[in-house]
Image (cartoon, rainbow, N blue to C red):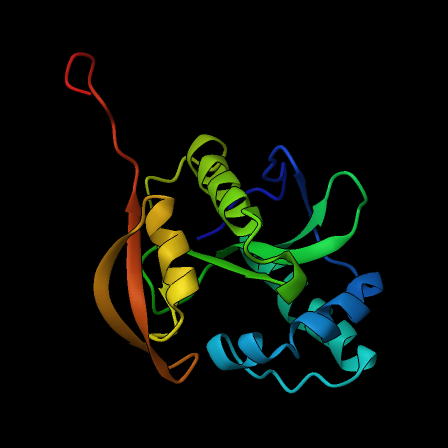
Length: 182
């Protein structure tokens, strides 16, 4: 599964862009927050050099292979990076996986919902996707609630050998509303 690289999702307050080596400090901080380690993974990134290698070897490699990945999300007003959000193509999943993570100081302000909705809109309009999935750690109720708010439905659990864990599984399907029935 591969998509053209660009354009990127957009929203009212947020700008999406490809990560670069200059974002290493942001990635180092994000990926060492307790909730990131607990609910997503501990990638073992403890230095900016390791963060640069992650950006090049994992984040940008996903874009190179599939045309999508986790875009860096920054505030339009200031250009400050606040999180990552996008689509991850996984061999074990039938559909692209909506993924997101935001720095602790930017949670609870609607940024995750805005970013997730922007990626859904982009996926539907630009990538012509009709179905997406998402996975969450079973104890990550905040992410689960966000997924439900933007139209995903719970669909059991999946064990992914890629991450070595069982995750809650969600599906989003494009719904058409026929005139007179909506």
